[in-house]
Length: 274
Image (cartoon, rainbow, N blue to C red; front, side, top):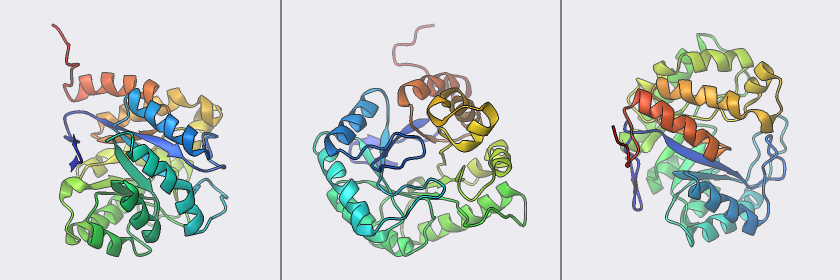
């Protein structure tokens, strides 16, 4: 997938998407409302190894209060504009609003990251803008009539087909199983155990397990202390063929990615010597 002067050559290594929450109520306590501080945080994430920065202004934590499209745009557009003026790094827009997506792309964003698939008019927006997209599985109620991985993959396969019909290339359609969204802790573990069903669909894939509550339930740790638990999901995800990991702790997870890629994908540092 080529964006600006960047090329994500899927299969050669795992790429890191850094999380930048421009919200006051992020579940992990890392929200940043100041434009200056948010941009500084993004630039530091890029400096320590992030390939993409995912900017969101709408909290998705359990029990969150929805905000208007206008407020969402007011939160993220100044950050995107300022960040774009200082870097050519790939900027992902974490939204499920077509209106916000259009404005964010005009401000310098590069791709859509939607937690609600291609619903709510996003399919029409993709047809018009033809930007790459992360399509995530989600449900309003965590109930499944078939094995979780089967239902998730069926949904994402159908959504990918719709995106192809909009003119996107297969490499521009990134599928996310939605860990922590519309799923109980048991559902999340079942999905994580069956990621190969997702990675064999023929599209790039993304895993967003960073600091999720299932890790907290397993370890007894609060969100900011779930780095090692997140690392386990990242390593196992890479072993299953995941292409992008969306994380809070870029520097720490980069080490996990490098070692996992060396074992699974044959990646080596440029200065590697036998």
